[in-house]
Length: 340
Ligand SMILES: NC(=O)c1ccc[n+]([C@@H]2O[C@H](COP(=O)([O-])OP(=O)(O)OC[C@H]3O[C@@H](n4cnc5c(N)ncnc54)[C@H](O)[C@@H]3O)[C@@H](O)[C@H]2O)c1
Image 1 (cartoon, rainbow, N blue to C red):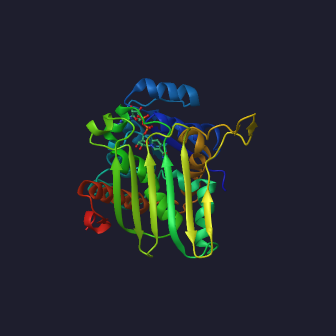
Image 2: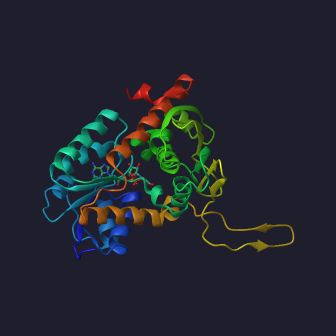
Image 3: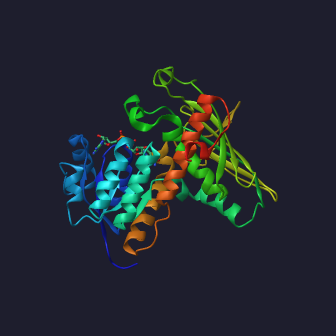
């Protein structure tokens, strides 16, 4: 790599803003952070202090106007992403945006058109593609090691629901949480889904019902190849972040387990046990978050395509909208019903 450095402006200093700022500040020598903005100025100030960011900007617009900033990192709440992408693209900034780009396909299409028109790079935060376990599963499929994939299972359960203030603009279970698993399904299988059938309910907290949302769901996926998959989500797994996958193929299977803080097993008179898995995304996916930003930074500096494209950002939203329709109408829904 050349000795070039890419300077970022960060928009949104909440949970994921902090994870990404730590990567840029402490783990990625080719990157620097020029400024951070948050509508909650105190959050931006705290992050600036924590990561040694030299400037707290008054607004996202101030970041877009800064000629020293080459790329923006959009980590604000989901309902702001598409508009910020359009503004960033018009300002000629390369863009890393958290998932999902929008809950509306029309907004996604407008944002992607702005990116295309400006000729800037866009990468969307499907970080699990950069996890070494999931990369190995994909490799077993693409290399033919397990033969033709027949069945895929993704288990993806959070340790506890997020704050209800977060849930409001998030899009709910299918568009906020399962969106990662819809992306994983495409990534791991190297195949596209044609039809989904969803069953969702409220088992964890009745407040999800009041919000018109769910906390528990299984979705059956029908792939173009004929293979079948399932995604299983829960907002609460008492023992920690439960993130596993398995694919059965004509020559064998590949499966991944959870990640643990240590490998120790305690043996006493009545039990043998170990510590629970890493608790949540900040711990479990630390490396993948760093690797996705490294890939984006290198793509910009070396003028190469980004590894997770605008098109990759759109399909999981179509899958999520189809899953919600399937749940509402109690029937299988083809993706082309929601994206004609
Ligand atoms: N890839 C992942 O694993 C992952 C994990 C968590 C969150 N996310 C995504 O990241 C986004 C943020 O999630 P979070 O958990 O960090 O939420 P959060 O609520 O902790 O933080 C969001 C921050 O954005 C700020 N904000 C809102 N509107 C803004 C605006 N117009 N300009 C500037 N700042 C604004 C808020 O004040 C808040 O500080 C969501 O879209 C979410 O889906 C992705």
